[in-house]
Image 1 (tube, one colour):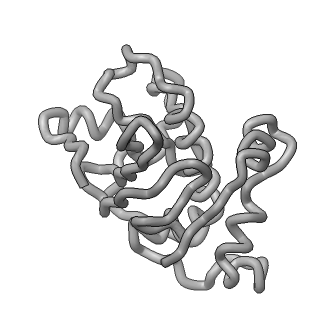
Image 2: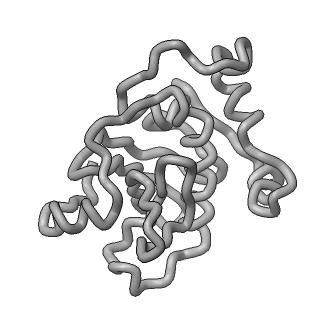
Amino acid sequence: MSSLLVSRRRMMALLGGSLAVAPAIAHANPGLARTGFRSQQPRHHATALLAPLATGSRLASWWVEGISEVRHGAITVALRDSDGVFYLDICRRDRRASAPSAPARSEHYEVFVANLGDGSLPTRESQGLAAMVLAEVIRANEQTVRVPDMLTLAERLERHSGEVLREL
């Protein structure tokens, strides 16, 4: 089973802007480290966007409980910490100035804490940090992975407001 370990020191460096997590991810993905070039064929699978993460792997101080395929326009990742399970939704990036602000984003995606707060609840610090670390994993893969059917958060809520589930 693959796992991605990111030390607290490395995570704090990421948040401080002095060290990127990408080298650790490239180390966990030997194909990327070996060539240094993008794959010739884009991969088309939701979990490929999060490789090498998989159910049961570790992401810094969180355990991956599950990764969904695209459902209602987003990929949902269930993570466990000392307080229990929480969910992160990965949506296509919305570049409009009026778009909701995500705790983390990459070039093509945004990572939202799925707390059903509709933007009105404060984000727990550890869950926001998890979103930031997950965005680093996405950055390592997004240039070679194409995930069809992804929606922005606004599109997702408009099209599937009553159907957005938190279960994997």
